[in-house]
Length: 296
Image 1 (tube, rainbow, N blue to C red):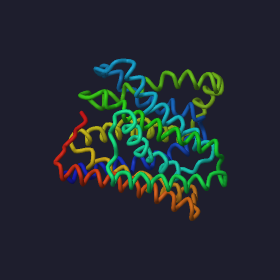
Image 2 (tube, rainbow, N blue to C red):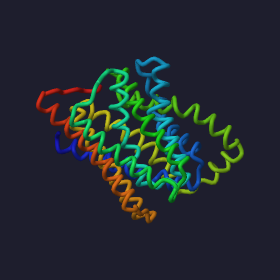
Image 3 (cartoon, rainbow, N blue to C red):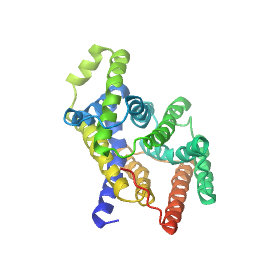
């Protein structure tokens, strides 16, 4: 990768890691539904100037509801109900496990021996984390959080069915498809008056957080990530995402005083290590075979 693109990949990882912190701060003012609505409403603003990409509405909605709505709404609910930010950032990255598992079940894409070892390490880490559930947050909150990687993985596979489209245009319309039902959900669950009060009494901190979540973390960062995936093999780009949980955990530790017990810390390291093992082994195989997959 070019040095400039390596810097972009690092920057995107840092943005996504800090987005977990921004979500935690924003949830002090907004409900999970309202915060997620604002996030995607802001990110969907480019749709005013962009034509809908050549993707059918059913597919567009399916990708939006999994890759965006399901993942980020579950994440917001989990964080709002006590799941630590650092732990959340690790669990979300476990989507790599579910993506490989679903690809094997649906498409017969069986993992290699090295990937299987990585899956085993990461799964052991998840089990260790499960052993700490109930100490500082509920089992229900953790179950909601586990929707994130599952939804993320399904969205990844659905995204394969939209090749050859411009990433920025696609992501903007995916955000629009998520913002509309989320707006209705917010009004139904929170009520029109509380929703209006939350918006009218928004602090500068809350405004900055949702602008960063919508405009920077969702719109700009996803566009940059898509451009990198278009220009380079996925095996070169995706490993940079492993920086996300480290950034999220470090920022949460500094700002919120988040600490990790020995078992949870070991589990988080095992999850990230297992995913790294999978991705780096895939990178090695792709390099040896000179496979250059690209996503438009």
